[in-house]
Length: 81
Image (cartoon, rainbow, N blue to C red; front, side):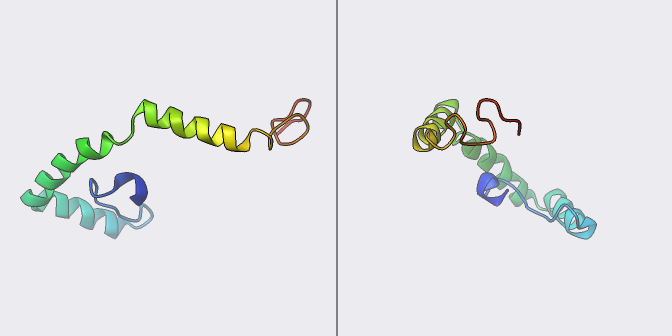
C-alpha cells in the first residue's frame, strides 16, 4: 500500500493491533500531521485518473497480447481457469 498511499497516509501493519492503535493515536494527537494528511490526500488521489488507468491497461494489453491468445493462458478459448 505504501506505493499507493505515498505521503498521504499513516501506514501500520493491519495484523498488529498495537501498531494500528499507535497510528490512530498519532493521527488523533498531532494537529500538524492531520493537516498534512488532509492536504496530501487530494493531491495523491489526483494521480490516479481514469485516463492514466486506461493508458496503463492499454500498454499491458499491447505488450502481452500474444501471451493470452487461443490456447495460451488460463482465459484461453475452451479452457477453464
